[in-house]
Length: 264
Image (tube, rainbow, N blue to C red):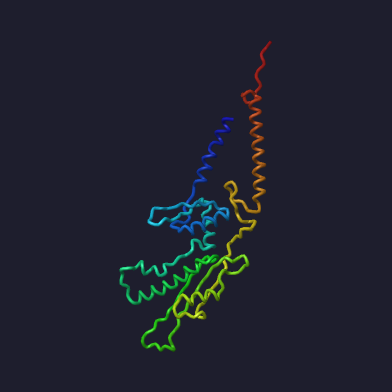
């Protein structure tokens, strides 16, 4: 019995050390992004920890996962475009406050800032996973005729998760109208929209999707059978252990050897 206990005593520290072996998956996160990542990983059977980092002026968050789950977790974040991209927008001028940019640099920053503001606004719409905008404003001069003045144009990419009706959260016409009102002199017909539906590699109802059970990756469709298997094996091991204890006690602690009988 003592020998069996000594052989199994190393299992508990090993299991504890494996469970504690986590690595940071994403850091420097806003709280909403950290919450979205945490929920996504948990729904897909990946254990995650959200840790608050207060080392800077603004609190940020770090997401930790087990080292064995890094690859699958990173793949999920790529498919769902998390954390959401954020552009500086008009904040680029506050960032460069005090500097004196050239006229060309100032115009380039203004165009990039407009595109960033459009992207940030679209990224706040529920169901939009990633939105990127490119705004082009042609340069005009004193010789440009008002009737021949070139109009600005824009290209917008939107990756989305379909609604319960299987539609995009925003229609192409809605995106064009929004960009036209956000950019001066923009016409809706000058906006090109590319809508792409996000298709994760494994749906939540996929029976082949892996799920954590007792620290093991098990296909979702086999979880119940795996639990039954573990229970049966547990009963067998317990029965074997009980038999060993019974044999040990019956043998009087002498390993099952009968005591020599005393001579009359």
